[in-house]
Length: 200
Image (cartoon, rainbow, N blue to C red):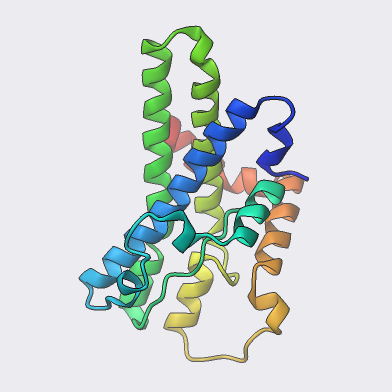
């Protein structure tokens, strides 16, 4: 198990801060994508409820469990009728939104360090870890895999192609890719330039 649930016995408060901040960023990504689609003339995502940051709309129990156990947050896809460049604009807004959320968390961490007593350091640590997690997710979503922003973009921009077998169209393939890349250090290496930029 490589997800944040490993913290439950050692530091439950850190677990709470990390999970809350990370999932808020992931949910906000879907909310922004839904609102952007509506601005481009496609209100299907907003009508389905994705235009509001409601956890029950963006995450299922299975996707939440996958995040807690493996560390990868795969929200439900935003419903889109758009295709081509408009769809790419909406879907590829995801990684920048995640990076913007990481920057906000790092700012909150700095404010915490300057204003709150050292006994609240666990909050700052949780915010910092959540910022790193969102940066990793921003890089990960640039892989052309199902359930990821670039994967959805490829499906919306290119002509229809033969579909993957049903098990590979769900969360299994991206979860396996996340675990492999995370454990090998490849994901951290790919996200390192983004992380350095966020911390400047």
